[in-house]
Amino acid sequence: MTLNPEEILQSAHALFRAEQSKDLRGVIAGNIEELRHYDALAMDRVAAIVMWGRSGSLLLSSYLDGHDDVIMLPELCGWKLYEFFERYPCLPLRDKLIAYPVFEPYVTRLFEGDFAISPALYFAAVQAILEFYDKWPTEFLESRRAFFLFVHIAYNLALGRRPASSNSLIVYAQHASDDVVARHLVEDFPQTKFIHTVRDPISTCNGMFQFIFSTVSEKFPQTYSEAPYGALLCLVNKDRPHLGMESRTRTIRFEDLHSDTLESVRDLCDWLGLPYRTTLLDSTFNGIPYVVTSRGKAWSGPCLEQVQRYSPNLSLKDRALLFALFYENFLAWRYPYPKMFRHRIVRCVVFVSLFLFPMKMEIIATQASLRRWVFPLIGQGSILAAVKSALGLGLCRLKMIQLLVLAFCRRRTYRTTLLQVDYKRQHSEGVAMTPLELQEMKRRAEDC
Image (tube, rainbow, N blue to C red; front, top):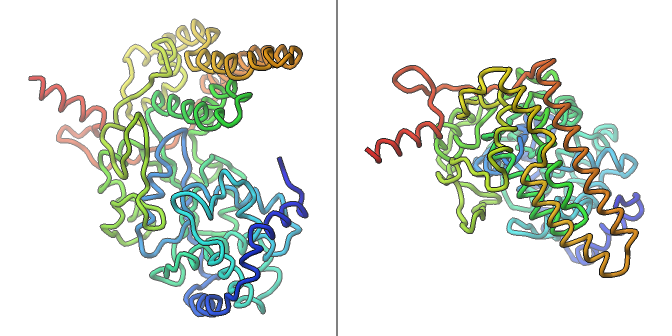
């Protein structure tokens, strides 16, 4: 539900009611002194990190948290900055800064979760910014750039961190591929660069479905049937550089972040113009370990098990369909695939033979939707609502077919300008080996 400006301000004032009654003058004064260290006009470097499904974009962000000349918001807390600004352009800077944390509570989690900061310290940081920049031109203070910049600075002040330089790099979890947001970033911060993370298409499709199915749909059971469509939608046509941003773009593979962390991070630092630090090998937000839980295990940082292809939500038929659909991705990013898919006629025959059949993740989602949503509606006597929901399942199948057909036809007709991975490291025969290939080679050696 979208709140109007009055409603979101009411929520913000309710959130900061206690802070408004506290004596924060000492904290504000200290923040004002800290603000002298920042050169707001010179801060025009942004590293925007973009996902391709479940491809390690947060893992990459967490590595950069350890650099002393980086400021950032943890996890996806900054993802909605541009959307918020576009939705509430009439709010003055102060109101924008205090209202953003309540914009979308599931995303902008500044004050809760593992990496929460104190609302009082954030409020004091906002007050310090307003006082310190009070005499600056209104045109700048009410600009999109100022809002983006001051949310990051306020958060950094609340953390008590001082970056190494006055024009430190801002690491921004752009998250979703969006040409409009990319264009805004470059307009506001001329030295913006884009880092796209990619992953084996089989694993990332499986992972994206599992995330939507278990995280989003658990909260909103009526959306179970949308999970397969959402998973593929995150991959189709999201595997290219932003329009006109090719020269600003770098691509890093999820598998390399786990199996070749040192070299991947060191190369990225060179590209971003950051001096390398050993702390970049630690996966943290706010200096706190970023712990990932998957398949019943928890860890922080690289995990070699994640390099393996994993697809319990996809059948053999589904994997064949993805090999046909994303053949160019497997080829360009050097992921293993059945060699018969090198032939266009094979890819076309496989796709035409399989796209009409539901994928395993569609069956899983449909069963969950019936069990958790449709049948309970029938039990409550809401027959009409249950019928509509059941018809919605068929509509999701049609949407899935349309998505698959349009994507396949577009790729066959117009080709695809894919993200390009820069392979610097080569083995002795002069051909870059993927982590999957290296792991397979080691396995065969052990078997021998």
